[in-house]
Image 1 (cartoon, rainbow, N blue to C red):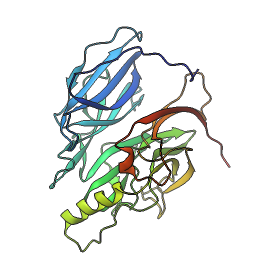
Image 2 (spheres, one colour):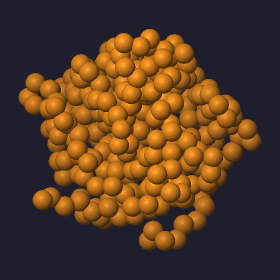
Image 3 (spheres, rainbow, N blue to C red):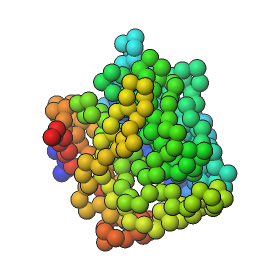
Image 4 (cartoon, rainbow, N blue to C red):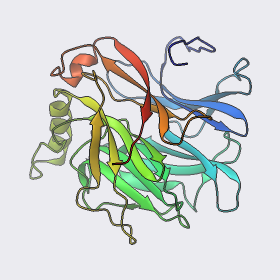
Length: 317
């Protein structure tokens, strides 16, 4: 039932901004990961990654701090590794996001217990540049496909970056030479019967609005200001897989459909599949402002939002 909800646990530090929540199950234990940020209305000051866990939905552990001080977890997937061991895989990022000299590093790590993490390969770092908010999933062959928001910009431009890694070398992420101009904010990627689907915010305009001949700091600032004043919606997309050499096509991401009544500040999805549900049916949660469809994204930042939950069924045409 999706029309009846009850509070089973709550937590507050009394001052911090707690966000980027993620739930996953590993070894019959439910984990909740989140990021703790300083309570600044402007700015972005991480205070570490934390988690709590439960085995019965009634008794929860005390919050545990782990990882790097500036680490922001963004996606965790659970699957068996090549040896058959059930593993949790985590994509996160560290760095001085939103700073004038911002440089972020994407990390990819694994855990057998959901509490201690180690690099998937020799190093945790898989990309350094302007990328934050990285979501990923695995193809039916075990290859990895990931997407990251390139908001701070780097040598590949501004917008979004796509990644691909072979099943036998998951720590070696290949990326596009030039970032996609669109920003797919707050991405959530899932595998639906072999198709890699992406849930994310939608913006009609590309993010790279400021010409490349302008100073880099001006591109970074100008793109952010313009993008914040434009309207947004939320959508589900399909990612076309790369070829045998790991190369994506010229238009690797296509819109499948928009979500109704998603305006202003919207597009932060949570995707889950009930244990007894068909493989093509997922439960999707999202939030949205209550405003005119043409209202800018920044408008929604100043007002309350509502949470919507629905069943999403996928059909092949």
